Length: 392
Image 1 (cartoon, one colour):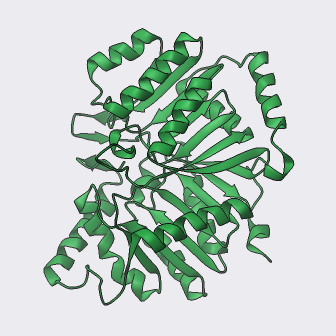
Image 2 (tube, one colour):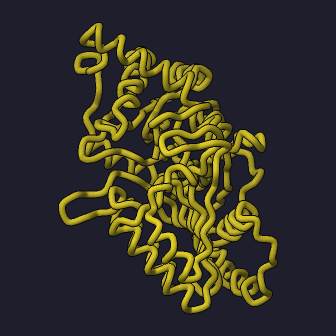
Image 3 (cartoon, rainbow, N blue to C red):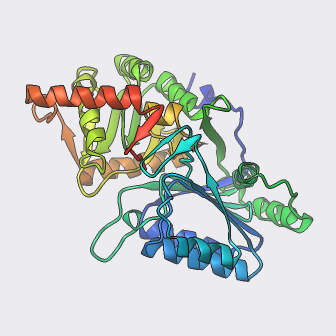
């Protein structure tokens, strides 16, 4: 039985058009264009939203949308976005943009306890949507003297965007119904998607309070179903014992498993913890590639040229158990082939392969002890209580 046939149909909608977008100029140019064309509503959910150059440009576009009569809802994590200046917050609220903070159970300036809103979601008019790992911040944008971190998003038009709009409204607490004009407009736009362009997409969410572990299950299904090849591109790659066992089993049955990881990280402890796993990965015939150009922040995986997942989910216990995460699963040969081509190009042109001979994790006993400490600390402690550790 082929890999494609074994993928469950549950939750997929078929009337969608999908395009992958690189972070940086491509993403923020598209984001601005979508906001500028908005007719009815714009919903945004972000973990980090700053008022640097990139953030100010997005805010200006949102203000112009409000002036045209568009409803704008900006939902931000209360911990990671707490550095927005009071003047900026006042400007946002005064312009008519609706702002809401997602609050953990307890937080202070330097730590929080409880869930965090790790989504990176934009929905415009219930028809256009962007889902990925990109925050609104200069480091995710291409600036004159500093290229963007490597990141990816999926641009989806169609039924999935309408479902994402409902999720955004529910999380906001907005109970009003869409106008008949907006519903008719959404339906008319979806009907214009040509049959040959239609792609099956489903929304996957993780939220331990609501007992949702859909993204976790999607990755597990990939480990179980892959027959030929699998590529995972991930920042902060710290799979737990169960995931490691499934990865090893996939490699043992002959699946070519590759992971694309950060060569340099914004969180030193996370990188040391990640490198602690290199010996295990290599022993299990899993290929490791470190991205060299900038910080790698993308969260994307694909297998057998049939299926892709992309979104905010990092393969570690924090994303599995301590965050609200949202990914899109895309079941389509062409989309999966495109995703694999993107990752193949990154490997070929921008990565260094890690082997047993050049593995930086196994040369020094004191380094190994430190890496083991970092791994244990992050995996066993920070999945519940985060102290000065902001995975972005």
